[in-house]
Amino acid sequence: MNHFELIDGEMHVENVPISAIAQAVGTPVYAYSAARLRENARAFRDGVAPLGRVHLAFAIKANPNLAVVRLLANEGFGADVVSGGELARAMAAGVAAKDIVFSGVGKSRAELIQGLEAGIGQFNLELEEEGVVLAALAAERGLRAPAALRVNPDVDAGTHAKISTGKAENKFGLPIDEAPAIFDRLGGLEGLNLRGVAVHIGSQLLGLAPLEAAFERVGRLVADLRAAGHTITHVDLGGGLGVAYRPGETPPTPAAFGEMVARVTKGWDVELMFEPGRVIAGDAGVLVTEVLWVKPGVTHPWVIVDAAMNDLARVALYDAYHGFAAVKPSGKTMVANVAGPVCESSDVFVKGREIDAVKGGDLAVLQTAGAYGATMASTYNSRPLVPEVLVSGDRFEVVAKRIAAEHIMAEEHVPDWLK
Ligand code: LLP
Image (tube, rainbow, N blue to C red; front, side, top):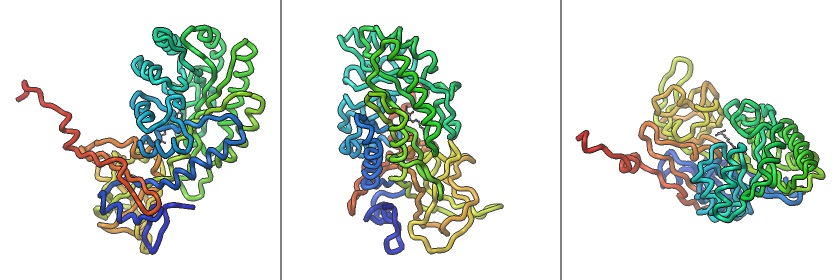
C-alpha cells in the first residue's frame, strides 16, 4: 500500500493531510511515513530471511534522523556508519554497539578510537595501513578489533557515475587480487580479528547482474582465503538496491535479491551482512513545498517552489528524477519546469515535464525523497536547514526542527581586529 495517497482530493501521509503538516511546520518540510519505513524494513528482512544467519545494518547516511534510525532499530536493524557523527547518532538512537558496522574510505584515528571504545561490531577496512593502525590502537587498549577487508571487485554497477563505487578506478575498497596477500599480513596482528570480506559496488542499482558478478568474485576470494588457512566467518554484501523514481521503473525486489544471494552464496557458511539504505527509506518520504510563483519562461513556465537544491540536492548532483505532484490536484496538467529559489542554474527539480497544474500558494511534493534527502541538505544561500516530520497513522511529530539562518550565524564570529 502506498502511504502517500489522495483522500478526498488531498494527498495524505498515512492519515494526515499534508496541508496539516505544512500549516503546523511550514514549508519546505520532509514528511516520512513510519508505516512505509516498517514495510520496507520487513520486506528486506523477509527477502534475506532464507539465507539463515544474517546481520542487517541500515546505511544511516541515507536517512540519519534519530527517529528513523530508532524505528529501524526496533525492526532489528543495526547501523552502517561512515563517520564519528554517524556512529554517535546510531548509539544515540539506541542501536547496540555490536550491531554497528563502520565503513568509509577515510576514517580518522579519532574515529577508529571512537569505534573501538564503543565496542562496535565490525570495521570495514579500506586499505592495509588502516588495518595496521587499527590493530595498534586496539592492542594499546587491550582490545581486538573485529574487521573485514573491503574489496573492490572491478564491476560496473551500471548506475550514475557519481554513485558507482565498485570499478577499479574508484577510490573505494582494495583491489580484490591483492586481498589474499593483505590478509596474510594483517591476519596475524594481535589487535585485529580479521574475520571477513566486505563489498559495495554502488547505489540505485536497477538490476541484479552487477551485484551477482561482484558476489561471485567475493565467493572465489573467500574460497582462496580459506585455502590459505584464514578463518572467514562474515561477509558483508553492502547495499545498493534501487527504488522506483520514475513511473514504470522496476527495481529488483528484496525477495528477488534474496533468491540471487541464496544461489550465489550457497555453501559459504558465513554470517551474511547487508547495508541497505535507499531501499528502506527512499519511498517512505516526500519533500513538501509551496509554490511561490509561476513565472513565464521561453520554452515552459517556471514553477518556482520554496524548496531548493540545498534541501534536496539529488537532482542538481546526479540529474536524478523525482516525481512532482500537487497536494490537491485539480485533474488538470501543465508542461513546466520546477525550480527552487537558489541562485544556481542547477537548482531545477523538473525540466519540461507534464505535471499537475499548480499556481502560487499551492502545496506540492517532490516524491521518493526519504533517502539522501534531508541528510544532504545544507544552508546554502543562508536558507534554513529543512525540518523533518514523522507520520504514524493519524499523528505526526516534528523529528528535526527547522534550523534558522540566525542559529548558524550565532556560531560565527567577527574577530575584534576587524571591528
Ligand atoms: N554501504 C556503503 C559502504 C555505502 O557506501 C552505501 C552508500 C551504502 C551501503 C548504502 O547504499 P544504498 O543501499 O543506499 O544504495 N547520495 C547518493 C547515494 C550515495 C550512496 C553512497 N553510499 C544519492 O542520492 O543517490
